Amino acid sequence: MKNLFAWLVVLSLVACADEDESPAVQFWQPDDFPPATYTFQNNPVTAPGFELGRMLFYDPVFSRDSTVSCANCHLQAVAFADPAHKISVGINDRIGTRNAPPIFNLAFKSNFFWDGGVNHIDFIPINAIVNPNELDQDIDVLISKLNKYNRYPQKFKDAFNKANIDSQQMLFALSQFMVMMVSANSRYDQYVNGNKSVLAEQEIRGLALVESKCTSCHTPPLFTNDGFANNGLDTEFTDRGRAIITESENDVGKFRVPTLRNVELTDPYMHDGRFRTLEQVLTHYQQGVKDSPTLDPLLKQNETPGIVLSDTEKADIIAFLKTLTDRSFTQDKRFANPFLP
Amino acid sequence: MLFMVAMTVFFTSCSEDDAAPETGSLAIEFDAYAGTQNLVLGTGVYQNSLDQDFSVDVLRYYISNIRLKRQDGTFYEDPMSEDGSKGYYLIDDSDAASTIVTLEDVPADHYIGAEFTIGVDANRVSQGAQTGALDPANNLFWSWNAGYIFVQLEGTSPQSNEEDDLILFHVGGYKTDVANPNLKNNIRVKSISFGGDEAHVSASAEPEIHVIVDIKKFFEGGTVVDFSTTAPCHSPTCGESIANNYVEAFVFDHMHQ
Image 1: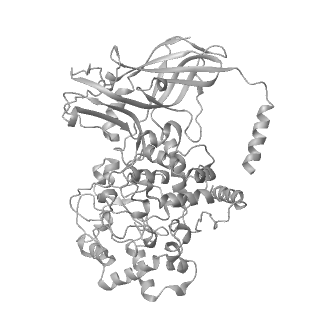
Image 2: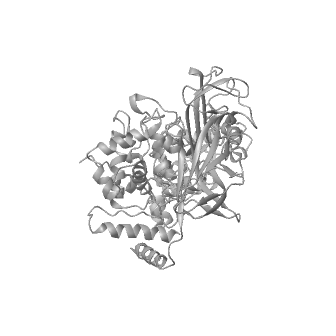
Image 3: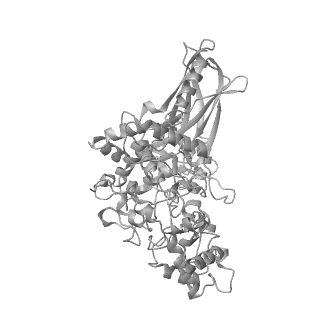
């Protein structure tokens, strides 16, 4: 199956190569990653589709008053997270309810957003577009704006060859842009791939600590198990998290386990952005975990909830976490704002 | 290119077969009623089983996976296209044309019943963005809990304690998880028999099946809905009892041959 996807991508590239001189657009499936879950058979990545998705991502036409784009809360320099706000800010400075998560390695995951309410990449943008606190725009209105906008009809035609722009093409283009965002070239990756000299001693000690204390949930190679957990932030939850979707009391206060890749860049942390630094996050696990009925059992193994950590171990872990930063991803020109020179 | 060749070979081999079998059309009309009265959106005033007045402003729902039953018990299945543009029908009671679903290219036969899904199955949602009836621009898509609203009924009741006397029912939810029985799958499949009649589909005859959708039954049956205590219903758990009710609302009435 994996091979079939690769073939489709190759085929579409061959088809485009004659007419398009833009840089190579090919989905990267890192060898040690799980197979991509994205439905490439319905929406193969092509150069024109990817470039169109890139423009859409950076275009404020997506908000009701054409002031805010996806990129307002998802900045490439910080792995497409939102560095400025605990809780992200939409049009008219309206405040949402959760911290904007980073965007990369989505193609390998099966659920999205802090509560996992969305289970297909194509549907991710809808959530942000229609949310009154984000872009606050009806899909049908957005589509009619795109159809009237000189910039787009020809580009959609080049990408999808249909008479009119519809929401499927808009979502397909954004998905093509987002699934291409693969981050697997950190120093950690180079280390795993055999270049043992790239990690310093402290970082290697940190890796061993992470493997013994963190990887049950933050499981390599994606550094998330794609699951949901209550990590003891509160005793009572105003944001019920996963329970909003599952309507189960067993899921109250559980949120999606975020990846640790690029975590150095994606502050503030947690679903509500309450922690500003990695130091604060580790101090939480060391001494701040609060008990509640749904607290993850792995955090209840000791007399007091949490993870046993010395201050030295914390420092080692943080040193390791920084090896998961992938500058080749955050500086990849293919994902940069196409409207800037 | 490989696929093109494969497709060409495939089609070529098909066209060399026997002459195309006879086909025809069959129409199914979904006619909304409130009890014995024809549903009039906006102005019609009806009573639920608790004698509470209510009116309906919006009635929209998805019908899909339509299958026609042959005399031998086998089915003809209405084909569904890969992009969702065919085989999924959005019935909007404010748009008369949408209430008549015409199936084309149905093999000539004598059909004795039909089966259809009220809603949009999980397999379709897992394929990503769709077009046609399933275009999210139709505003029957839950952005926060990805999936379609199967049935949307909105109106008012003087007994409602919501703002503007609103009554609102958005029924959806198709996700399942063995570990979590609370996750509701509100997909319902309805079978109807043509009451001993046969729909004769042929090149020259287009039978029309008349199905009554009695919206009063949305609020009675397994669960009686009290508009004074029912908050706006837009989660899979809330919708479950409504789905169990409304599956009984779809009734074969008669057919025109």
